[in-house]
Structure formats: structure tokens, C-alpha cells
Image 1 (tube, rainbow, N blue to C red):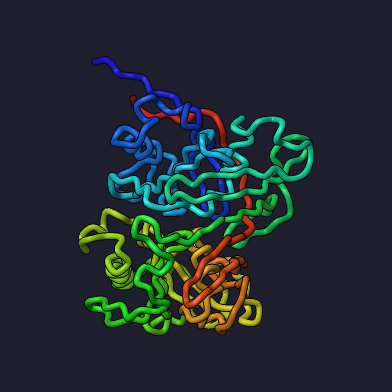
Image 2 (spheres, one colour):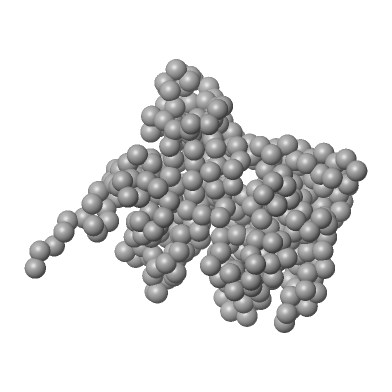
Length: 392
């Protein structure tokens, strides 16, 4: 019996923010995988090591968490005023599914550095020292991201002293701007799809919850921690080791997705795992982060915990941070009220690994709100580069 050798595909394994994933140049993919469809999905599933009934992704590059089961495809952009197109695929761990319905805000911080190092940015655009501005078209959601990438001696600077809670070691700071991050109402969408800042969300088996349903950064369902029996200072174990809690959050997510118009039938939620996110908020309170550091109530505006791919995130998804910053900037949302109410253009929130600051510029006229940008600082670093191998 003959055995076909594995195929080799140029790839880079990168950390961006509190996530990591496998990055590809579009032109480096096998021809059949250069277009959306089953061939591309099958390839990326095999690269990451999914579906894995053991939940470990041992035979692939995935790390068995939503934060480490990610893929990115980057190409030169044909759009005016953009440098590269960025497509994100969230790979399910135990299901044969790649979810293309949303962005990864954390890996967005790595797209600029990857594009520069991979030759996708013209050399004349890259300073010898300073910042290189990379304009990114986020193809999943049709939005613009601007990354300000530090350059030293003509190369991407990766090391530095910028510390990011949820990441063990310091690195160089990459400032990321999400332009017009909220849905603008095209194609039937809207920042607040129900037209309300707060809704009464009926969830069978859970009850009727106050909820802020928002499309900004990523579709997100915010509820009050106390309404679902939590303090808002919980760490991963309190949620992820409780099957009943996970089932409750998935039910909230499913009925929230239905209310937001993201799905037409409740059964569709299982096939749309990446979006929407569900998060719970509470007023500032002191707690001990997963690192052992004490987070004092006085250093934060509110606490937020969010779930990704069915589990409580160890820190905070970047796109959910955009949703938090946007909702915090709009008086009357649950996020804004938990932070003390009023008008604000930035918020610092506590999450399981520590704190994060995100800013947003919101403008309201006659009850209608627009957000011009959200901004935060992350870091990124190449972990490994070369070729990833998959069975032909």
C-alpha cells in the first residue's frame, strides 16, 4: 500500500493580544483552498487538529481553547486606501466547523506585523525607525482596522516593556483602531438591532433578563451578573467547571441571537458558535485575578466576564472589548450603568486575568448613536515560522 506524503504550506504561528493562531498568506494556500468553501474549511480543520472528540487537538496546531483554535488568511488588498485584506476563521474544537461570522480583535493586533514581515507592505512605506501604519480590511465583517506597528532598524519590533494582562511576558505595544466598529444599519443590521438600549430578553428555563444587545466589534449580549446569580468577579473555574452554568449561558446566547436577528431558528445557534458573544457585567469590586494579583475596585470602572465558544474567556476577547467600550460610551446601556452612568470616552474594566482599558468615540443625536472608532493597545509576537504540514 502506497502512502501519500504530507503537503507543506508556508505559515507563521503568532500570538496577538491574548490569542494565538496560524497565519497564512492567501497565495501560499493550495489552489483549492484559496477560495471560500469546503476545501478551505477542511484544510484549516486539519491544520488545527479538529474535530477532536478528546478535546485536546493533539494532532494539530490548536491549543484546545477558543483563544488558541484560530486561523488567519492575509492578502494584498484591492480596496482603495487599504493595505491588506484579513480573514479570520474560528475553528471549533470538537465539531467539523470553521466559523467565519466574526472577527478576532486580539489577532487583529498581529495582522499588521505579519503583513509587514511577509512582504505584503511596500518597502517604501516602512520607516527605518518609528511607526508603520497598516490599514486593514477586515473581510469577515466589512470594517477597517488601523494598526500602528513599531519598527526598529527597518524590521517589526516585537520585544518591549508593554504589559498586557493575560499575557505572561512583556512585548512591544501595538495600538489598534477599529474604525466605525458598530453596524451601520446596512443589510438589515444596526448597532442596537432591537432599537433599544436595554431589552427584556425572555430565556426559557432562565427567566426574563435585562439585556443590552449590541453590534459593535462583534455581536454581543450583555446581562447583569446579579440577575443570573453571579457577583461578576468569577474566574474561569467557577463557570467552566459547572456544566449547568455553561448550558445556561448557551441558552441565553441562543435566545439573544434570535432576538438580534442573527439566526432565524433557535436550532441555528449550535452552528454559529463564534457569534454572538454573551457577557455579564457588574459594578467595580475587588477580586484576585488568575495570576494572583489583587485587582482593586478603585482601579476599574466595572467588571466584565465574557464567554467565547461556550467557555468563559481567560481574559477578554478583543472584539468584545470593542463592544464593551462602545456600550460604555452610550448612556443607559447595562455596561454604561455598571460603570456609573454618564458620558465617557474610555473605560477600564476588570476581567479574569486583570484589567484592560478601551476607548470609544460615540456621538448621539435624537436618540440615534454612532461610534467613529474604538481604540486599544495590544501586543503581538511571532512564535514560529516555516511550514505547517498536513496529510494530503
